[in-house]
Image (tube, rainbow, N blue to C red; front, side, top):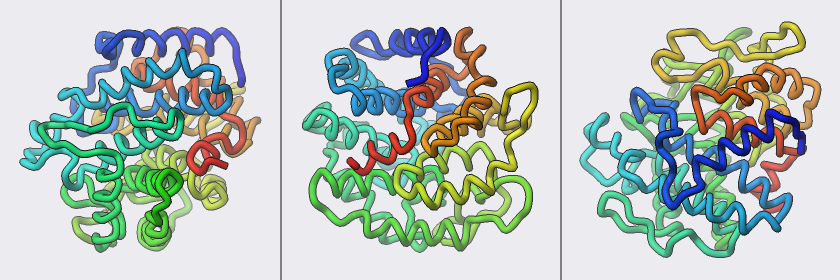
Length: 342
């Protein structure tokens, strides 16, 4: 693990967010809209990855990390995390019953990693908005939706299938198969084919992917794209198809800017205003992916752009402190091993 003062400060700040019986919401960034990409759920699920990777590297950390992961789980069930399904999108169904992969898929992935780490779920049943399920039932429901959709991916808002959300579906199918002997991951290649043939942009500049599909379709919604969403999805997919991601990343790296021994992924003001991505967030994901793929020179330059903010505190905390610490902990293939058990 790479360590210095920035690592230590980021770890202390992150731990403080989850030190109590419930998350310390005062230390969390307040998103303008929970349906967007700075949402509270991301400040829980993605910092948790740094703890899960740490546990794989050192199981003796269990007594320290498991209480924090229990607190993160409680946070994920909090109404503030999922109520956007009703209050912002006006959906009448329970948030885990249909679609809404952006929440349901990430909750499932978290619980799957928790079972893998500790041999049991954080709670016997998952109860959200009066709907009671468990990890196996939730995963089976998501898999059924995946195999039933024309896109061959689970839909999120407005019946669209998004690249970064379905990256969690890929992960969870592999996790569930490992834990329970199912064959859910057989469905992964169909979604990857949609990604490759329909959502991959044939352009020499800019984003690599379209954000997602049209409603109830495998065709791309061509008006929406983001390099910040790209790099987020690429890191997540590296847990399942690292060779394919490595090839995609070589094309995508055209979006990295280099100056004064630093590397950044520059995001425009409009995307930041609408909470699609930010320069620091996209740079954080690029740092994690570079470490995962063993591209240490590039990773160091990306880290240089984040280190001062890591010491001072990111605006998007605890999410960005979590990504910074995750990047520091990753060794080549660490995330892939976390997903596949390799």
